[in-house]
Image (cartoon, rainbow, N blue to C red; front, top):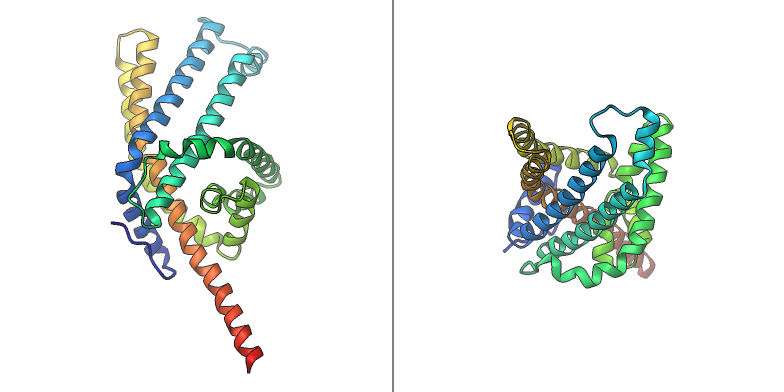
Length: 270
């Protein structure tokens, strides 16, 4: 059984903890991660086939491309991707947090009823975050990156505290304050490791899809299936890392706040 650290860890310690949490939670999470990858793969295939059927064999001009991307079918596809991404991310967060808190590891799909109630607020929060980060990126890039990492733990906070999406944004902002570089380093190292692994599946998927003599639909399906195998590792690994960072920062911030309050009480009594 996984045991969470009871004291703040070094950067290396947080990464080690994330790896242990990933191993402990993967057994209960891989099916949900696979379902998520299949859903996204099916939507991607539908959108790609629609794109190909629209442009035919020619090369569309920029105006035609813009019209395609603004069409109702593509906008509906983007909406489905957003909803699926938010729902599955929240379910996996709940399941991995359960393991981190000493639970046996519930099936992420068992949290579906709980997560559905959070989705509307989470969609609004995601759009607000995306707009704020996009504006920040336009302003010399750095502000956008700063905001993106300052709010990156909001889904973990939402699932742990269950006080709403915007409360989760506030908790993430509070915890990462003063720990921005630490968070960036841990997430960058973990993401690089996972991306190197998942790139293998993506490369094989593209290679197989490229050399097959089958029709376009078959090649797309084969490519998406292999990409899905990489996603089965990627999403639980990244969420495990964010949960490990979140719990470490909770120990740092909340522990320091408690110590300060106790010290203040002791001073008043003296």
